[in-house]
Image (cartoon, rainbow, N blue to C red; front, side):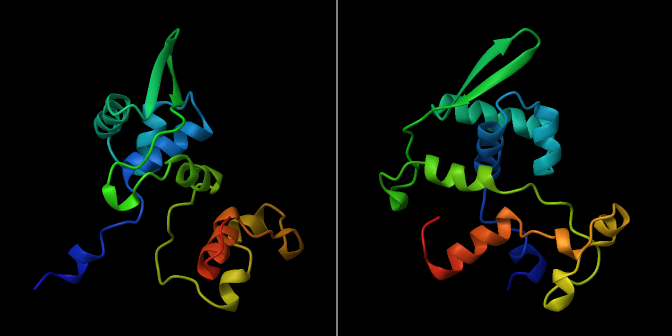
Length: 149
């Protein structure tokens, strides 16, 4: 039987999708920044970008000392289960989401306590009256209801 820890290490979104969405949001993002955001090495990011360029999902153009990336429009998912659906719809959803902060140690916040502003935002002078739901919460609500964004 598998250990619980091994089964809980998977995620819904792959690093390929994350990196493609990040580059849709910011076409001149450095590999170092992509690696930090995905919590992987720069070498792994380089391999993912190479995969995406080789498969035709991404083009890379050199601008001086920086790379400029462009997500190729009209590309479809690779797996037959997703059929002829375009990748762009998923990328737009992912690119619209706000980058998450690293998780805090301790149990996850649920219920009324989760709605209170964080100590960081209180220290910055942001109270409850300025609290707005994030794009993540808005998209989660739409997805749970089965509606299209």
